[in-house]
Length: 60
Image 1 (tube, helix red, strand yellow):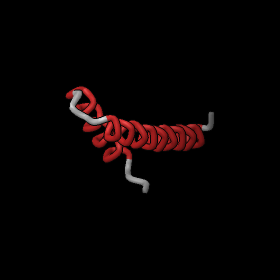
Image 2 (cartoon, rainbow, N blue to C red; image 1 turned 30 degrees about the vertical axis):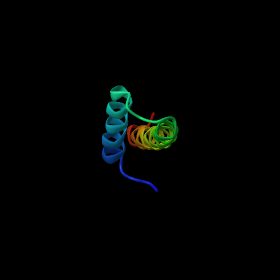
Image 3 (cartoon, rainbow, N blue to C red; image 1 turned 90 degrees about the vertical axis):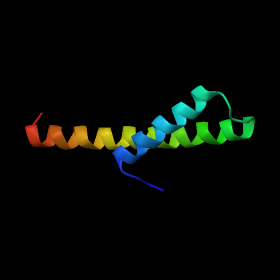
Image 4 (cartoon, rainbow, N blue to C red; image 1 turned 180 degrees about the horizontal axis):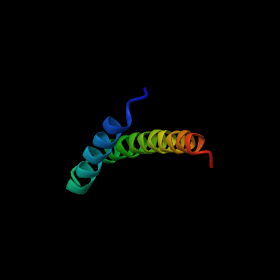
């Protein structure tokens, strides 16, 4: 499921806060890490696309 950049960042911040609380079970931790990796990949892809669009506009 794709979500926009801002929502992905919000969810990542929530995951980080949960990890810092250190109250997750091993299974929950595993799921949170997987989800964080998905969100990071989506954010990186969006940033790359935006960078390419800007380069196209600027003619670089």
